[in-house]
Length: 72
Length: 441
Ligand SMILES: Cc1cc2nc3c(=O)[nH]c(=O)nc-3n(C[C@H](O)[C@H](O)[C@H](O)COP(=O)(O)O)c2cc1C
Ligand code: SF4
Ligand code: SF4
Image 1 (cartoon, each protein chain N blue to C red):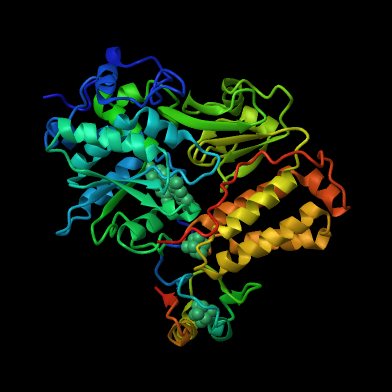
Image 2 (tube, rainbow over the protein chains, first blue to last red):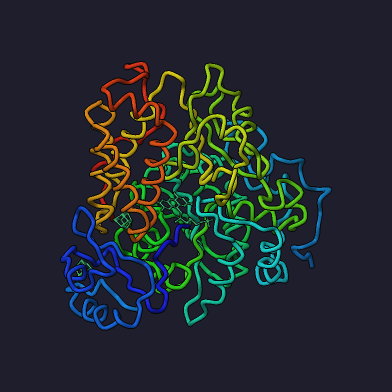
């Protein structure tokens, strides 16, 4: 049973891959932690968010049109 | 009152022929009378609320049983999670007998040859977690459904008070038997995976917590219920207790389903299937979400539930021997195309990444891809890992990455437009046909 990256941990960004529709807003608003793959879907850098990035991360989560990006 | 941890080793058969019926294929399905004659009465079945059920979870924990469906999750932990999920809704037991792996036949062998062992396990598990309903899931049109229905009927007459058993036939799709897809379908939805959590053990069928367990796991559980953990551990190694079923095919003398002691090495598995008289170039292990392994590596390594240094993960027990004149690149390209078609199309990295990987591999197999193209293939495989809602893309990328390593010399050949295999060598990895238009519901 591969559980890789699916269980949320505190202070982390997660993407619900079923909800995500590759709008790419998250990569614009949080380039420090989100890049896009060749098809425009977000690749999340799994390192915990440091304090300076939390506000940007919150903005990205709010901006995500499908609520796929979540902050835990 | 019999306790499940009672050891009755004297009555237990010699290992490692535990799960499969003594005679080979062609024998009629195991009848209930035959079954009870072979194994004796099942502790707990005549008294589902008795102490046998109460001690079962501890016995399963002591036996060290882990899931046989490919994931290898500790079964006792799952039993506890479902039993403790509580709430007002009683849990349900789901027997995963779908066996979506095209090269696997072990669950079918169990369901046709020893259905009562699997059903004993399901009923014991149900009693242990307080479930009042059991569903056995097979694919639509599975011939095992008939012998299964006969077995269910016989049991209902013998144990009218036991939890009722229903047979469900799910769409013939590879990912339909992934556990979240399975419970979604059993809840009236499409047979496509969902994001977990919530896991089936928390919210499974309807809102009932579901214990989803592979058929072989439950057959093992039935024997642990009868003979106890020490007996169970008398075969295998401390880390790999009990036996394992393997489906061996390809370039071996006697393809078929074999039962071996846990921790067996690849060489023993090949030997049981008569060896590879014409030579074996490489071995595909686990299933189509498994990996290619060099023949020497396969022969020497213990086959284990998890992956560790110097071991090979046995996954769902699929072993396919590639003959010397076959082409690992061509085989993998063909599998990747089928696996890409199996995506449930819900997650971008899977829905777009797998077809891209498949197209790239097809080009490589045809000799049209350059070094840069191979590097792109490797990059994509790395990018996609861990980014689907289910493990399907992880399995595919693992298979593809292993092919690029094990068949590195052959990849080099293909980059220069050549292939050292016999051009007309037929593929050895079986694929189902005619399921392309299968609906998700
Ligand atoms: C794509 C995919 C297909 C699967 N197909 C099966 C299957 O056919 N049978 C099965 O038992 N498990 C299958 N699994 C694993 C199940 O999700 C689940 O882990 C298993 O049924 C749990 O039982 P176990 O703990 O007894 O192994 C599949 C997983 C994936 C990702
Ligand atoms: S903003 Fe939301 S939908 Fe768009 S790519 Fe990011 S996670 Fe996906
Ligand atoms: S990863 Fe693929 S198969 Fe799994 S849920 Fe997402 S789209 Fe479906």
